[in-house]
Image 1 (tube, chains in turn yellow, blue):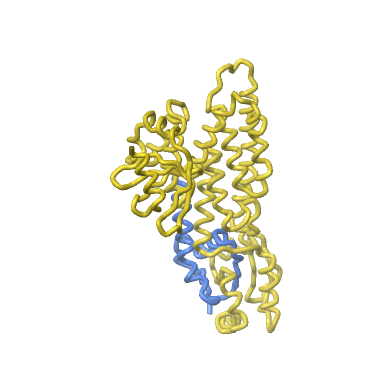
Image 2 (cartoon, chains in turn purple, yellow):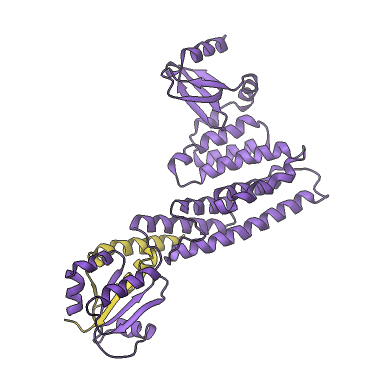
Length: 340
Length: 63
């Protein structure tokens, strides 16, 4: 087939090669061809018959007979312009896995994980419109809309529940859906303006403030725990531990402990004495810490020093472990003072 | 879970065929018999769906 030779040897067409999935269908006595021609009927019997079909199945071109000269590259270029964006193998796999995980979570009612996995796609573009006809990209757009609807429903339910005069006793479970909604809104630029609105009114009332703080810290740990990014997920245990330390003997602490146990049964934070540590935490203040060479600085408070190492609670809620020897002279003096 | 796993396998299979399908306009021939499962047409469709790339189809007699 002359066209086949041209496609394989004409250098002017090589630019299109990676932009199409190429397929030859033999028309003689072939069930696949019969099925194809039923789906994409064409008038005329000239050979070859050429088609360009978009990823969502829409036919972009159909014509009988080969396209001589510039007609072929012009047709390919026109088709590419209408075909939308395409992804590399690696991107396609990431897109597929993120969308599947998000959909599963949405179906099971876990809006936070659904949001986190959908927000992972921000590295490719806005999940609401990835400008592609790839099946997972179209699905991502649907999920984005569905997620928004479900969040609004959850926020309305939570607010109704809080305003119900029969519910005298407040619990963190009533507040968590609101903090989760706020966290999800923060993840997507087009929703960010709505984030603060979710808890703004509650934050004005003193009786809600402690539970709002607890729920916000717990949700921060959950976001880290459900991330697909290893670095962020690695921070989850210390963020759960932070909730246990900051709010001992609360429902938030027991929830954080249970969730930490689920993601890291061997976590060192599970052994800590929450009550004892929480008392000492409140006695020390946040201060500036730096390394001997001055390259690293952070604002944190001392949690513990033992065996030449210190544990510091950063103002972000993260707990870090540092070798005393790498700390500045000033910090080492401070640690000696604190030991007395 | 089952559909997730089968989806991943299908995507993997589709992506694996990409090197066969897409070296500069190298063309997959959908032969008469026997037809491998999944067929090359359906593999091409799956690959297109997964990556967003359009399919360029030439239908003609076997040469």
